[in-house]
Amino acid sequence: MFKVTTKHVITDEEGLVKAYFLNEIPFTYDSMDEDSVTDELIAQACNNPTLSVSLIHQKSAYLLEEGLHPLLSGIDLDPSSILPDTK
Image 1 (cartoon, rainbow, N blue to C red):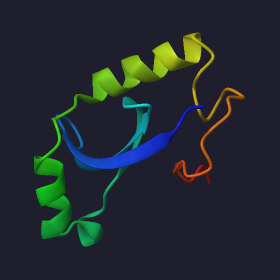
Image 2 (image 1 turned 120 degrees about the vertical axis):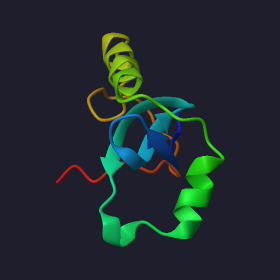
Image 3 (image 1 turned 120 degrees about the horizontal axis):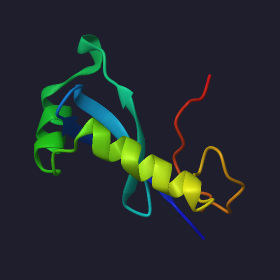
């Protein structure tokens, strides 16, 4: 069973984002607007490795090729998984 988690990370192009990981593999992110950025979120992001947007896209493509992309493939997810809002 796979689990989707989130972390706030700093990216090379977007700055602070909410990144989504499938078993620790990044596959997408939500940009953060300035009003939602807090000192606490910045501190959390500083404790996580910086990611490049191209790496996130590369890992997403890999998961898609393997039929494991949590948004586009029918895989079994842990009930505690946190998925991005797709609306």
